[in-house]
Length: 201
Image (cartoon, rainbow, N blue to C red; front, side, top):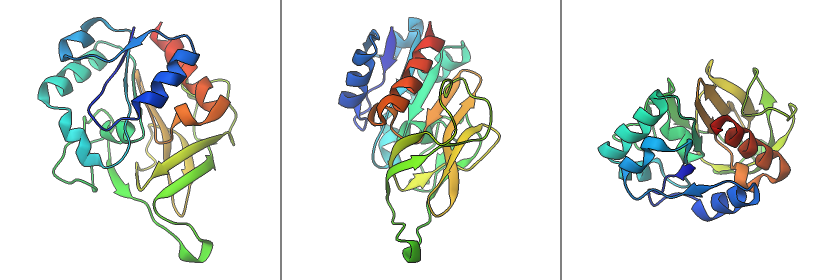
């Protein structure tokens, strides 16, 4: 069973549709206690980083404890950003801290008509071996919509460039993140979700 965490800012409908299309069994837990025996945890998200403040201490502890037990954890978009230490978008709101580094605002480039927010399809540039991206090749196109992003650190397994280069996917032990929306990224996105589900088995 996959737990899909609902903190009021997630793109749950589209993630549910993608998981259902892959034949996954999933639920939306109403209590942190329900994370004690799940096979995997997904934290989706759209919008402002401040929304993650709704993931209060009992939920933070339960999600962190689940990850420390080895349960695969997957953060999507703002959910990926929340895996880091914090974000300049909401300086007073802490991240989970499972990934080192801080989220910063993207740069635009008026001369190249690169606007913020960054919305659209971009190619992934693989920066290391990644279980999450198994079966895909560098250059795979995925869908982004965001104004803030994570730095390129050793945990970055795929980067992309808007006006500046940022981490598009991260992986550290059993913790994974995608700045893009796999549930809106066609076959490549479904393959990424399938890879995560296989790691949950």
